[in-house]
Image 1: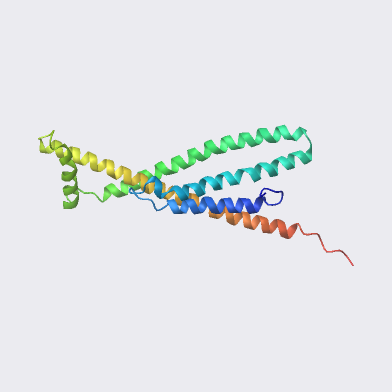
Image 2: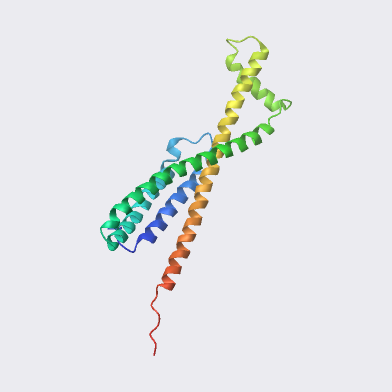
Length: 198
């Protein structure tokens, strides 16, 4: 009912809005965010991703059919190759981005955690108390508390890194939507037939 020739730009625009909105919603997660808090936003992203591919496949397949049956096999092979390589490249790119941002946030968070700070010392002591029943050495308790605090800092850094990643995805979707609008408007203006000469 929806997927018909000529509607591809509109469907792609809706898909980009869905993906961008879902990513923007998830860009403010905290370590208290639970799966039930992101069901709607992740459903938007998944639905947008599922909505984006069929119009592209349809438009390409129709174009290949117009050129003749010899182009169909080539189109299918190129389409499968680009989807596979795009998936691998995208996963690698976003994974690298998240890892880099985690390191940046870790350095930033650790720079604010001096052992001379009474709040940090109190937190290390509090975390070390989890081992108080099995460890009697104060130095070991402090070391274990420091290790637990480092784990919490790493967790917070990963949360912030994924927030940055979702924000980047939202920005990419906004840029892609703007590009799509400009491209569609450009084609509409220059696809008009020239006025008949009098």
